[in-house]
Length: 301
Ligand code: COA
Image (tube, rainbow, N blue to C red; front, side, top):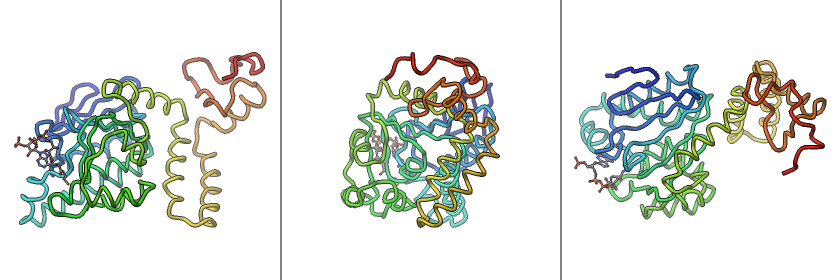
């Protein structure tokens, strides 16, 4: 059941709010259960991620949690114990979980940021790894805790951690010991990008979202799709795939970023692509046709 109010939608287990600047905040909202993922939460997240994919207002999706937790993983009571004797229910929530927690997030054309504000355990690692970029509180607590209560990291957690973490040894170590680790360690082991003190978490995330919004959304979508796709290709396939995608992007990018990017650099000399993005059409700060400042006289950084 949902209650709509302007740009916010309150589901039973999730809050969704779109800011005027285009950041949509998706907040797991079962703080009293440390945002453990119940069948209802899975069904709602599946619907939410489908809706956001075609929501014109949403430019960047941020997934976070209410209270002390990002998510304490699968709900041991509602997801596991209560569906042990309910094959149909178990299949439904398993499928919803797979659909939103991996497929819809990792295939989204929109940039996705996981903003890890606290506990992050077990099954929560799948959406964590599915998101494009992870900003974490330094003192957030992570754990591959499955071993502590007698299962293997399932729901594809084993697969996503070995694909995401550069060190297979670290993946084995934390999966076998179940030892908790913090946000700084999550960055060191390649699970997160940026760790900041908890009181700077939101500001850092908003800054990153705004930076992503300076790029053409179509170019950004192609970039993330390309990096994800080539991971499982060999050299020959990758060369051919990227060549085809580059041609497709020239047709697909209605902002004509490539042409404008070259013209602004080579002809108008208004920016340096090595240091910043070409201004998007209609972006604050001037039209890309306008010569902002000659490169030769602007301050070099
Ligand atoms: N599944 C179901 N319920 C959970 C849960 C989970 N994964 N994680 C927390 N809860 C519930 C607790 O049962 C408790 O419910 P209650 O108030 O009805 O008794 C409530 O959330 C608060 O949990 P509590 O353990 O009292 O909070 P805490 O702040 O002391 O500890 C955790 C927080 C996250 C460290 C602890 O709850 C925990 O270890 N949870 C399990 C994490 C895990 O192994 N997840 C992997 C699942 S794949």
